[in-house]
Structure formats: structure tokens, C-alpha cells
Image (cartoon, rainbow, N blue to C red; front, side, top):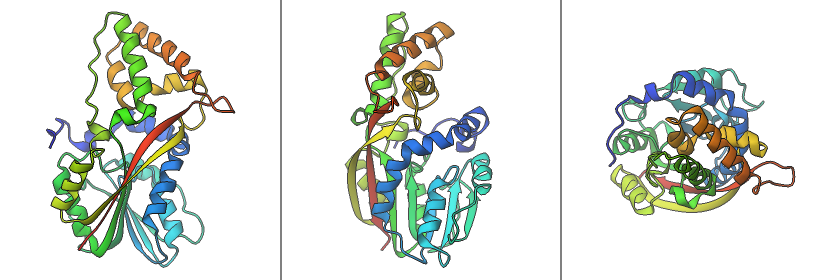
Amino acid sequence: MAAAPSDPPTDRWEGERVARWIRQSAGLERQLEPVSDVLFAAARLRAGERVLDVGCGTGPTTRRAAAEVGPDGAVTGLDVAGPMLAHAAEVPAPDGSAPLSWVEADAVTWDPPEGAYDVVLSRFGVMFFDDPDAAFATLARAAAPGGRLVVAVWAERPESELFEMPLQVAVEALRARGLDPQVPPVDGGPFSLGDEGRARDLLTGAGWTDVGREVHRLAMPFGGALSAPEAAGSALDFGPTRLVTEGADDAGRAAVVGALTEAFSARLDAEDHVTLEGTVVVLSARRP
């Protein structure tokens, strides 16, 4: 397992980072809608089920789950970021949805109600645990016997143009200025569960059985619906491109934005919005 970051998870999801995420949540949701579609197709939620949405953020998947299980079900959104949960609680679910509840906690240390959920669901909320073994064991305790785990995670970074292309463009632009950016590992952070063997060993070790894996290559509108210049500016705020540019000076960042604008101009859809391919893995498992 990777070494734990020095900052506790709540510290990493506070301040300007979480404020920026909330500001851009509508665009990010449009970008990730194809991911939600394959996640919910795999989950096959049924009326009346009790669902736990892990790493729910501002709650789009939580509300979708509530709509799918209906008024006889129940859905809980779990996240470490209090500001995101506060924002999520302000957005109503569709009419006829299950009642919603929100829990601010880290799955590593959370003491869940035993066997309370028929489905444990997550869209990109399970890749950042400081102790993945403990977190997935916690989620297994939260699931009822026979309960299902269905989570979407990113494949390893080189499999997604969405991340790899802007990262490489940024690195080349910085190196052209004599800088030496530190490129993050291909399987670190958001890509930590992309490896099939590692994910399977992690889940079975935490008490899950019948582990399954589906790979989906999805076209995603970058940032929701952004032009090439808009996408270039946004790329510096998220993912590995943020990591390699955050220490650059204004001139270096401007050089990256210029190079990204040119590269993104070759990836426009019919409406002149940047669209890139991302590779998503849907992992499934069952609690015995």
C-alpha cells in the first residue's frame, strides 16, 4: 500500500480546493454524466433498496440513487468534506425520491451501522483512502449480507486521454522553459485502483466476494462544455496537470495554457467543445 499522505483527508478537502470544486460542480457533472450512466447500469438499483453513496461530494449520484430506489428506499451520502455536504443538502432530490441523509466521516475511521445497506455505491470516491484495507472493510461491515458493492474508478492514467494528453502537453511546455516538473506516478492518487490484481486483492482481503470488473472507454466533454481556451485554463485546476503546474511561475503557467489551447483545438466536437476519452473501471463485489 502507498504511504499515507501527511495531511489528514479533511485538510485536503477544505479551503479553496473544495470551494473551486463546488463552483465548477455543474460543469464537472456534465463531464462525468457518462460515468454515472455506466455505474448505475451496473448497480441495477431496485425500488426500496437502502444505498450508501461513498465520497458523494455535492450529491449528484446520491440524488440519482434516491430517484431510482424511490420513496420506499433510503439513501445516505458519505463524504469527508463538510462544505460539499452542506452544498449537497441544499439541492432537492426529484419528486418521488427516497429520503436522503448526509454523513460527514472518513470511511477509514467511520463506525457504520452494521448491515444497514443493500448497495454500496461510489463514483470516484474510493481511490483516496489513507488506509484502503480498513476503508473497504468498513464498507463491507456497512453492507447487508448479500449486499452489493459497485464503484467507478479511473483506469491507470496512460489509458485516459482525458488526463494523459494535457499532462504531457504541460510537461513539454514547462521543460521547454528549462523547468523540470515532477510527473506523478501512473498509478497514484485517482488511478490507484486501476490495476486489476491490486483491486481484486484489496476487495477480497477486506471481506468482499465475487469481484467483477468492467472497463469502459467514454467520450467526455472536458469541464462540461468548454472551448479550447476555457479548457486550457481549467486543466490547471484539476488532476495531474494541476500537480505539475502548481509550482510554476506566471510565465510558465501562461506557456502551458497556450500549449494546451493549441492541443485542445484539435479535440473539438461539433459544437466546438473539447471532448476527450477517459477510461473508467467499474468494480463490483458482494458481501457474503
